Image (cartoon, rainbow over the protein chains, first blue to last red):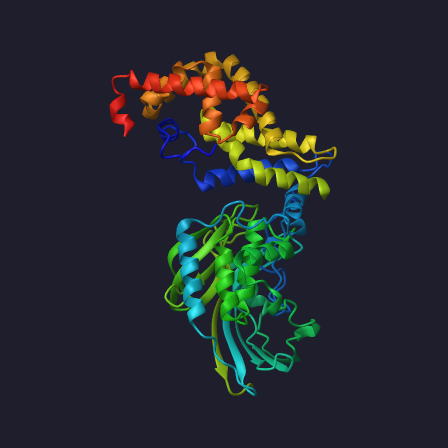
Length: 359
Length: 163
């Protein structure tokens, strides 16, 4: 009806008692999500992938890590149900309708932190790498190790590895990667400690060189950063497209993708800002901790509780003052495979600088 | 994929309006969500054939879903009666003069009024939904408006709510 809404007293009075006047976005998003599930093909029998959580890697050797950001993540072997994947596949099909935004977003508090960080990020200029210089990405990584023997006994601990990567101004040139090797640093039980000692797990330092970052015979940088959209909504949609069917949940895996990409240290400021804004569009993203400490630096942890079989929080930690990414981590929200709740099964702290030389 | 696209188009166009429609006519968010998901389950079935699903067709489905819900709600009314009474006590908004006036309108007049002012339908759309003529709807709307303002004005506590 085209009646002027303020001039018509009947309309005004009815609006004042409209039970739907104060429906929140969350409430709508909840119902949207649920009614979208109607699209599941009824004829198929769809089952969730069963499994036992295995945080960390089952080997204690350093696993080849591609810089393209997909280090092996066995903790996320749980697949989305085929039904959920079908829904998402349809949602992002042909860009008709985007998955991003439509189903809600981060909490207001988390969105504020992320959008602020994005604003600060745009203001900062990335370190300029001149010809002959290197972008140096120094990181400390903590990874969970878990092994089981024939007799069924299980051992677990956390390893730490220091990594120093030198990326030439010309990305197709020779990259240099210095890895300290993994050193067991945290134990949760004496049995595992004794086991690790008996295995005599010596760190295995490496100095690697590879053109275009193609370490360990990989194909090098697989994600072309320049091709990723800078519009947050489109960016998130393109992320959903790439992560579809992986991880425990659509939204959880999208955040993992963002964290993986940020962790490389290669993301230019404008894309970093867009990634923060995209994270603000992911349903379930919250400020998980007011103050988070990573290697002595303090920031705000933004993350998402993964409610799948492996209950954990994927978090990125940013300095709200500068918008700089300090690191990222994945924290168990309940005990798992002998790792107590609260354990960071993966943790990375990152520092970026420019170097005139490489080892 | 074609069916999915048509479903998503219908969902995008209709979900929020249909959710609000249920929210206005049922007890709580959970019920509205249940009924909404039922509407889109039926919508998905309907899309097995060709053709699109317009918002008006979705609302036609929603109307039937709501009627079926009201029927089963009546059946379990004896069980829920006590609970309901409690909920009413704790919802003072229901006691406003406008609410009281609305309750005293005939169900048909009330629905025309609410479809128009809450759900934002045109007379044409209301007539489609209620299987009647647009003229009949406009007449009923006129009558309902008059009755409502009369009822509100004759209520002693109405002044405060006016401005």
